[in-house]
Image 1 (tube, helix red, strand yellow):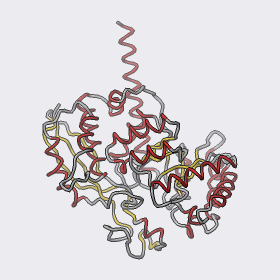
Image 2: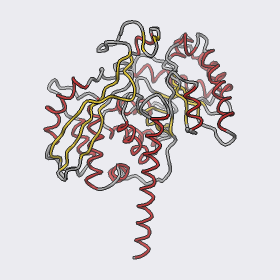
Image 3: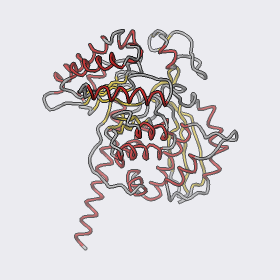
Image 4: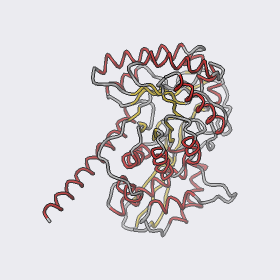
Length: 423
């Protein structure tokens, strides 16, 4: 099955682009927007609409395979690629990348995705991570359509992985509405929650961590009250480096704080994502590793999750090799082609580090569904409900795609077993 043409359309994402630098500097909320000026290059406002590009491969039998190019909420921060706007990049996709794909056979996801991943722009750089991300989704969908298989089956086949017919725990994120949205996640019985968006010391963490402490206590009590005796989700909170800021990056003070936070969260297991931001890959590895060691010496079982500065496949390998975190977030749009997410999960699992197929609220439904197939094939510890910050929509997209795919895979396995018995 060949690709006979490539077309593209502008789209919107499930959330917004936010200027993380400006937010960390303390710009104030103004309704759903922010006051103050943008500080990250490319931004015209601290918060602006998220944009995507749908890439569609026209197959020779008339089928259309698609994927969505999208970038994360905090584009341009933590070493990531710049702001991704549709009008800037559609011409690049159609003029520079499409001609490389037209006429190609859709017989190998890894080969075609690798081709796009390593294409160079006229200036010698690779294409924006969002482009590589969306193109690889479309290629995976195309190979699946050509072979009349699910995307999960294509990944299992090409990476020689065993089929496991069990769901992956889904991690929901509440955004700033961390109370009502936590209730939604609890009622839906999410496996991991709430993320909570703790990205400011004064308004969300507290100068001494007291605001987060109060929230964790509230959340634990809420889970016990609404969830019942048989519901014990993992509590996973992203603090965007604010613990390091509040405690002056003092290892002793951070460990003391996390020890107290663990007691408040009990009996729930606690994960803290991005406790500090060291400003570089090497610095982040060094500080996270030191914190992880210090926690273990104290007998504190809080798990540390790497996010900032752990953006590419190469970064993830470094964090895993150094055992710098208990878990790495594999933030799908940041890695470019979806094959890099596949390989990152497999690498982390091989060396005993937790794998979290993450991404961004600022993706699309297509990215969320594709991530489900990656997760079902590679078996990470958890995956993100995406896109959006409303809980319901992202959880529905990911949960239902997972449920549908598992039903199809079980049906096919049963049919295969029946056929073999008849023979």
